[in-house]
Length: 162
Image (cartoon, rainbow, N blue to C red; front, side):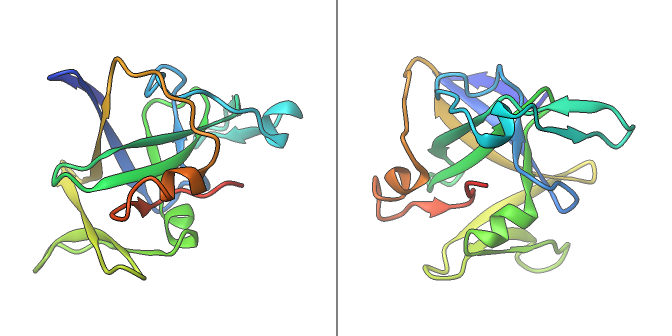
């Protein structure tokens, strides 16, 4: 499952995907964070799935949580009816990070190029996953990714606005 509930948290299992054009999340995941309309959503913009289907963009959502090792982390996700949360390597890198996929040594991780902080990516059945823990009963409105970035000195910005 791409979402697990545990101890008052929603654990979002983000598939870190080198083929995803944008980081995307289904509407029912991290629903405590408000959806903000975008030019794409206002103009009927859509993605094409691997099978050729149309997936309409419903806006975007800034999600803030913590990783398995308690590092604060925020991502901007495009909201659309995808099967599960996708973390776009392209968007993660555009936001000042590097993504390393490796089966040796430190394994796979995302590293912030400025702070050198690393977030571990776990490999489960060939899929690279990043766990993002968000508080369930806390409705949040985040006005921008920069607001998230200013909320903590340990924040690693992994998403970026289109």
